[in-house]
Image (tube, rainbow, N blue to C red; front, side):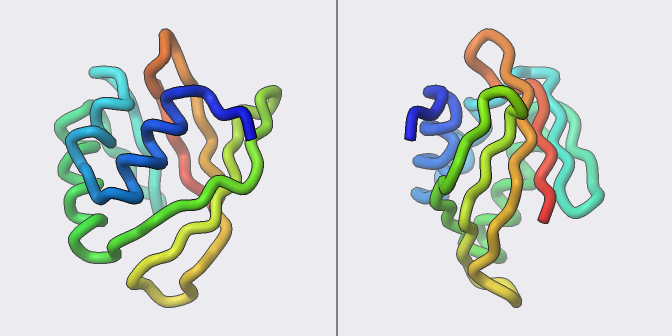
Amino acid sequence: MNLPKVITDLTNAQNNFDSISYTDCFSETAVVIDEGITYNGKKEIKSWIEKANQEFQVTMKPLKYSVSEKILKAEVSGNFPGSPIVLSYHLEINEGLIQSLKITG
């Protein structure tokens, strides 16, 4: 699968529980929406992913990426009920960084 570099970097950071490298995939003004909660900017995104890494130990395996729809389908496994699950990552990428990410089931 031919993924944009930032998505490969995001996946590697997630699978290594590296919240700093994960956060580096986002622009300064990026927005993440996960489970109905919005995180604005790198500081909030870093706090969110640090907590998620500690609590759920999530890993992700990319399954399919649609360039036209800007959606990554990934199998997500971790310490949470229903694991593993396939989630959709709706991405807006600008100048090699993620500007927005919305995670849906």
